[in-house]
Length: 363
Image 1: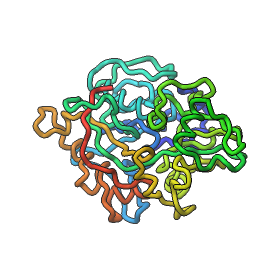
Image 2: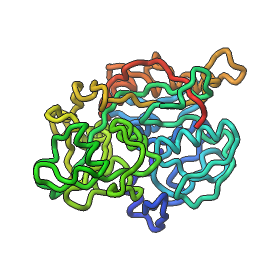
Image 3: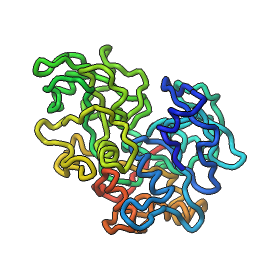
């Protein structure tokens, strides 16, 4: 079940989460009797569609397993969530990083909390089964690690441009973006530019900064915990912010709620556009997605032991949910209308570069 962001704006109760003003009715989230999916905003819309069921490709496609279906939790909404019957209320995982941490704390039993969220830290053993992550494990990769990052789909990253910005910022290079986010380049083609970053747990933020080789955020960068993949956070001409191209396609095509506002999408590869077409016909540009710097695989993350048939804690239901050979799994990338892959294509994803999981340490 999805907590609609538009509904949140109309709710009567407002709660600040990680610096974001959000709202929602107390019963807006599901309480699962089976598997819980949480984390990345980038994978959220496609994940919600698959968890709740969708006929966007014609036939109904809903991901489930022999032992249960999926309850999917948005990255933004009320400050706290309860995911399992009689389970604890805990801070909502707001992005890829928080999702993987919540899964890790569900495994190791240590207390979980979210930076900027005032919900008290709590033990959440067994409360999250699957994390959405728009970035890979990075330095946490370990062939013997407790986690398995299973490829979900191919995405790419570019940047959105604030409305009212004069022409000139639409085609940038990696070198220019690096200078902009290092605060050594303040205008391009005579157009002033202001760098902005989404919230700290964003996988898109992490990927973007890694692509630029930036580890320390310069002083001119606005990083006031703004929501990712939301063009409406850009309020001043000249602002730019990293943006998932898959999310842009999903929003502009009508597959997902449109939060782009009047922002425009730029290219981090100069004249190579991230997308082609417009409106319902907008699609990813494979040349952009295949770029070694700006294309990326995205993942769903699970405990490896639970999908390893040789493990005493093997969970056949969870293993089925992340088995790419099954037509209605989270990781399938088939092309026929009744498959999960066809649904993910509608949400702007291409097939991942590999189906092989990556083992990694707990976060």
